[in-house]
Length: 64
Image (cartoon, rainbow, N blue to C red; front, side, top):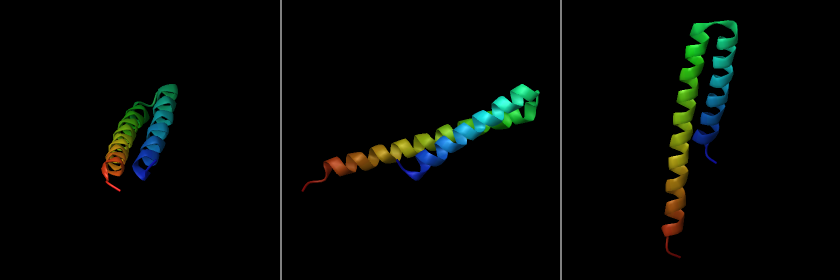
C-alpha cells in the first residue's frame, strides 16, 4: 500500500463523515464539501492503485 492509497482512503472517510454530518444537521455547505472531499479521496486512492499496479508489473517483468 502506498502513500496515495492511504491518504485517499483517509480523505474518503473524512468526507463521508462530513457529508453525513451535514445531512443530519441540514447544513448544505458541509454536505457538498463532504461529497467533494470523498470524490477527491477516491481519485487519490485510484492514483495510488495505478501506481501500485505499475510497480507490480515492473517487478514481474524484470529479468533475473
